Length: 271
Ligand SMILES: Nc1ncnc2c1ncn2[C@@H]1O[C@H](COP(=O)(O)OP(=O)(O)OP(=O)(O)O)[C@@H](O)[C@H]1O
Image (tube, rainbow, N blue to C red; front, side, top):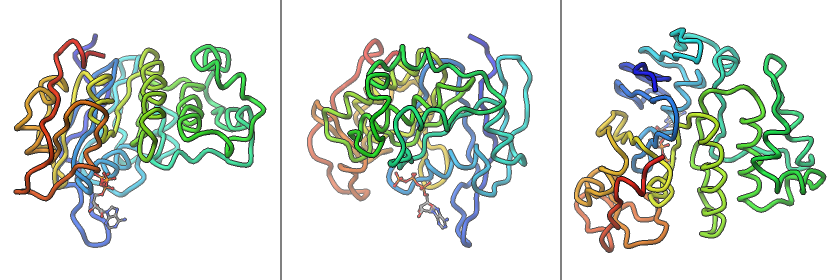
């Protein structure tokens, strides 16, 4: 694994509608596996992802060091140029085309400047091959998320930015999406915004916690999740075993969250 991070953000600020949303974000995403981007509701996670993609105006530096070893500044570039560098984005609301079939959704996602890996995608997600003629709008939430992630793997991407893929899904579907993410993570580096700490525990090797527009903590995901006090302090969350979402359990500072969070071992959370 290379020492240079795949993605590096330095002193990134975002101001929107007169509010100072990101206040000097510094973070690195190392090559390979999953880095989790965590934080309470409204902390600035989605804005961080959008700043990487040039979807919101920002100041500061975002650098990307691709497989070719070339470090390029993404800040100041237009979104289509950033995406072309090999960065895929699955937004929070999935945005599959409900009236199109699975196969049509995939075809539509093929970037002209990239090789296409339809066979590999169907190998990773045989369910999609079986359902290739089904309208995407009739798929379950978990299957729609699978389409959203498969679209990103279709092209030659080096980094996937995936925003809350398990949001609003029933526990069984959360597990399904976690499987999909695990398969995707074998292919490509993922920066994952995720409120469900069980999913984080399963997939992420690194974690970055954003709080009030700044990075409040960065390090091993396993170490963070093993530190009940710190997790409570940073995320306002506690859990007692199954799947838990930061958002669901988030409590205002100073209030006692329910239960005690399950401790993760380094092995459990390894990518
Ligand atoms: N276009 C905008 N104009 C003004 N404020 C905004 C805008 N977009 C986001 N914000 C504010 O910026 C803050 C960070 O929002 P962001 O969506 O990045 O948080 P988040 O950590 O992803 O939250 P969640 O977990 O709830 O999705 C919030 O207080 C939000 O209300």
